[in-house]
Length: 485
Image (cartoon, rainbow, N blue to C red; front, side, top):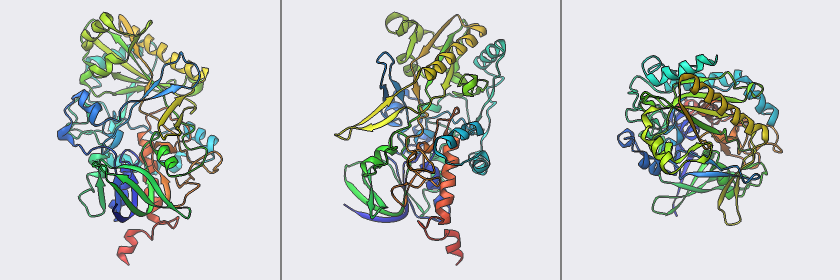
């Protein structure tokens, strides 16, 4: 076993951990960034779907229903590489509404408003170069098809905002990593802009087993490298940002006992709805998400958001395809795959009420459960019905759909004022253990109705500010102030 010391150890390099590590390193803090997955770059991103699923994604995990056995599992998808899910997501950049932050405040008394978050949203957007994605708005036939359908049913479809730049070639490879570095993941921004500097030490293929705790304070972490050798490293503060599925496991394996750890997990269940058209649509050759409809985002309006246009790559498309008889197989599935170029997809994301859980059994094995209530399932069904109407109004002659899946897991170590209802305080520090912070989507007190990455990054920037200021006494005065002195 070896031992080293840093000012801050960050576990996980995605939208939360990558931002915290990069922000602190830019300010001269000594940071160790540990990532369970490998370190890949644009040269590796070739839109090889099966390789990407193996190398860059966590092996698929599933949230099984705790109640009704007739409801299938929700597939849980996440990135396992330097940059985390920001490497394999659609780069959609949408802030939380005040309506959603009000839900956070009601759930845990966290006391955060848009006025608090807006300065951090603005900083992240500047850093990533967030822009309105209009590249394919008037050029691609599949986008025009979708616009026609939304207009026909009287719904609003508008371009989305994304962290991608002018290098985007509209190749549709976002979910396998961006081969042109147009997609601004934490990999090619916050991390790569700092990792050759002396202040940021990056170690991929490093699986953290637990946080080291002495006298009620976090003192470091224990991790295994790719050879399986165990290492112990120490720090003045530890930020766990392994994502909503892994972060609670690390806390539980470290001996924390707050009963909220792993509870209140939100899944933000998503479902593809596909329409088959007579002419080729080639929805696989545009940015996976170019536009969205917010008309029904509020719970009282329906509780779902629709994003367009999209189609999974062939493996993902076929393995999850369903019709009125359930999952498809045999000749009907083969025929659907033959028509791959003629499908246009809409992605529905339905609001849920955070009833899922992350559980460790007596042997330390992970389990995930879902527990949707009838009104939550009603949102999913209403979203599918709406998307079907849009596609049929656009001219689709057949409609199919997928099972439920998500990349937007949130809320398993939520932030709040009261340890009876939350895991960390409003500055993201554990209620139980000093110097131990959470810095990812686990913080969200309630599931957002929009893609959560921009909010994760904003909160991570806020956390980096807090740590660098030394406000909690975990670190010394700001590094910039020390250098001046």
